[in-house]
Length: 170
Image 1 (tube, rainbow, N blue to C red):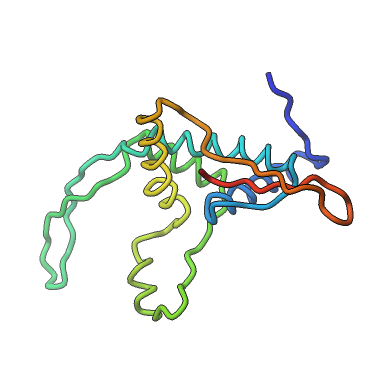
Image 2: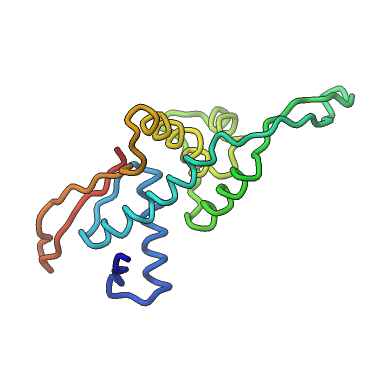
């Protein structure tokens, strides 16, 4: 069994650092940090991505009755998460921070509201709708599971001489 790096912090602080950096990595696609933290974040993030990849296709079609603009009840088919995907979604929400969508430059407020009205947790949606299909396709083509991140060493940081690195999603 591999030794867990403690990063010189108590457990609660260490887990908070991993949660914050994994959130930043999955939201922005890369994060710059020390080499030891980079290795820990890589492990943490890849486990979360694997969880999403193994369950992202589990959906169930459900017919719901909704009231339309005229006040009439109408049956509408909706795609809901299946039990596997729902469990994975809840685990991801527990292990990542909630990131709110930002308004793009020169985007009107009404366009922003329209774009984000159905998305309660943008990071979770990004994981299931962007990363999971991309990496599942990669796994099917190459027969290779894992290896979703890359660590690039940057050299020593001025001041404390700590080895720096960038963790990127591939």
